[in-house]
Image (cartoon, rainbow, N blue to C red; front, side, top):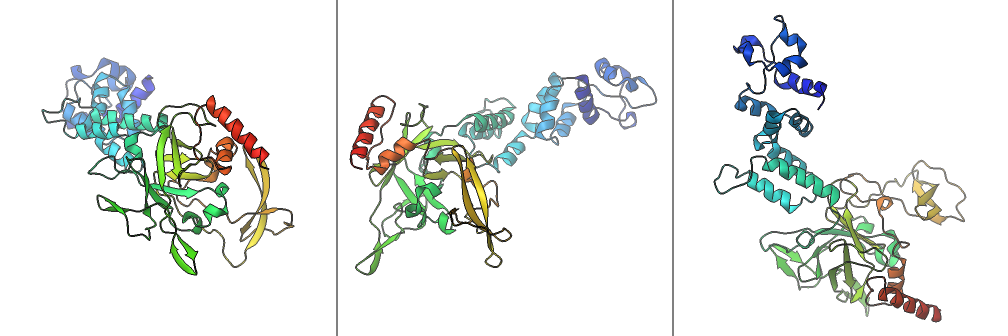
Length: 409
């Protein structure tokens, strides 16, 4: 660390008036005196060395510093590094403050922080800087780990605690047949689903119409899509049951091989749908996203779709939407745009506004589309029940399916 940085830390910690405490000049650290030439003058205050400053006083000072200041202080010298690393430096509070704003924190960090709270007990063998290590582990894990484990994805991973409740919505690319009855697209809260250890998926919201449901620690779980009704013989009746299951896969047809937890394969009504890719949320809340070309799951609450225009004074304007695969002209409605000749343009409903950046996932930051998963999407659309895995036999299976589909055209 440069002398100037050490000097700044010294300004914060070590300049104490002589009148407040009697200190022999022999206790002044020569190295500190070199950084503060004025300290040799009798007309100014002397600077205390860290070796002389009592540990209790030093701990009392550093607990008021933020994380950035603590990290800089640790680079000054050995004693300051030790003092700024201890739990008494405020690291448990820093962990609590940071994690309260995050959707997912790794279990290793939480367990380490719990150990730090028992640091004075004889049964705990962790060092006194366990809270700082918990903070560091949580930040590193959120930045580098892009896979999800079994305990994190499952709602019933623990018999005494509830796991993640996933918010789900269809993408616009899924088509009107799916988005027309999706709660999120109808400006309601997103559908809430849970992954269970037995490989099934159940629904928390909306509540199902059927009387059969499960209970986990007081949370009612319904069959997926069981809130829907169909018209039969002039009467609205509950829609047929649709069973959903899930499993991890390592090598989907359209994607590179990755370790377990990078891909999730979901079966809807007995048929595999295009693979969901696991990644971290782009909005910095450490949450997980499962994304395919047709849908997205989020481990945090998705803000509802918001109508951004008023009925009075509504007009239309032309926008060019650019993607990785090209661009197209669309028409959107707003309150202050200019209307134009749109007879040859595609009409698009009013887009969404991200009112709360930590709750919303925009289509523009999503990575999976029909182009990146076109082979899996094609197989589903031509009636495939099970989607293949790998690049060898899976490619041969796809070629056969493609040829059969072309023969039926």
